[in-house]
Image (cartoon, rainbow, N blue to C red; front, side, top):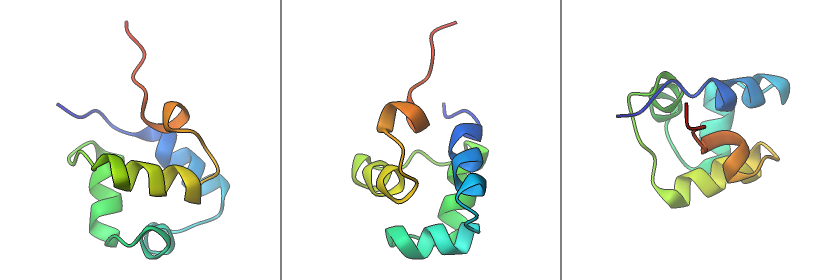
Length: 68
């Protein structure tokens, strides 16, 4: 089950990108970006890599879940 991806949302906001702008950069829809941020959609590895590059973050920075 996906969890809220606040790290991705924070990185997007820090880059001053809207969900639509990020979606355009990675070839996705705004709805997909929103669902990823809400934790309601698990993106493919390919999409994760595109998002990471667009936000100048590593996959670990954005998508790695810390064990609690």
